[in-house]
Length: 340
Image (cartoon, rainbow, N blue to C red; front, top):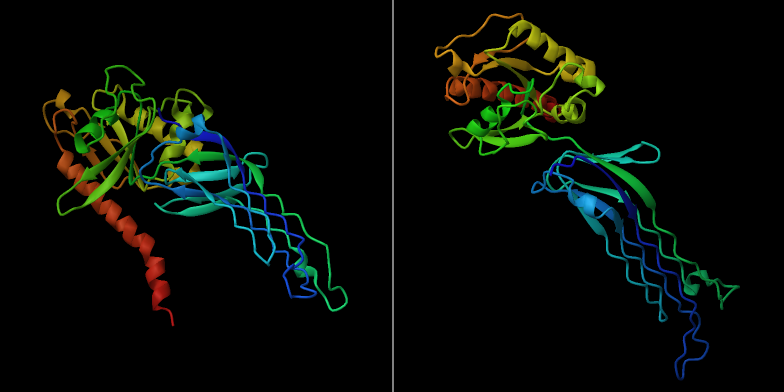
């Protein structure tokens, strides 16, 4: 089951309390206060794990609590700090405060860490309060409470290419042919009920990631069909591929509708580089690219997933576009390194 939005309660550990203690040792007169400090409470940490692709585990366990710190002891011994608790999530997960809506942060790459609730500080023991005029203090501090928060986790898949099209445009078939992914394929609308990711292998150890998004119908940006639920998953793709079946009644109208839904959902998404892919070319039996007005498209392709037609040309074009975008993204960093 694909789950991309969950609510969880997290509680960081409470700090241990300080100790009131006086040294008691034979032949040592006036040993003085020796109460140690309490240990700090454990933090709650979110960590990106590339082995995960869904937030399903958090539907079974929605409360996470870190270990509390131990109390201080005599002989100036500080209590042991509580263990942190780590919550693994898929890369691309956004964390928000569920009550205020405030963005806490996001984890994008495997191994990224984000502290979402800080443990409480340990309290001071009576040894801390010794002064020249107050040499036998009995004061001590309780440990501070750890943060308690209700958080919303939202997953946005990260991919190089996002496949956009109406139901039954051939997106799942294409993904199954060019990658090892095995999405559900059927001859009825809305076969795909959740996004699918596939890694496309090329020669010379090259590869990139393609995301298959459930079909987008008219009004998807307003919540119709499944579009609104999953449109956010193409926000993090580098480029978009609009799939239009060759047997569509009106190629231009279908393309315009898809572009409209994307633009209505997000202006930023509408600015991403895109291409047009005419699918199901095997229905014609010949290579043919219809002429439509797709201003701004970096290329147009005609392919057949089932018939393995035109795939090499399309994948090569996607790869060259991805390389160009990667180089463009690295340019500011390279320019910064050249500065004196």
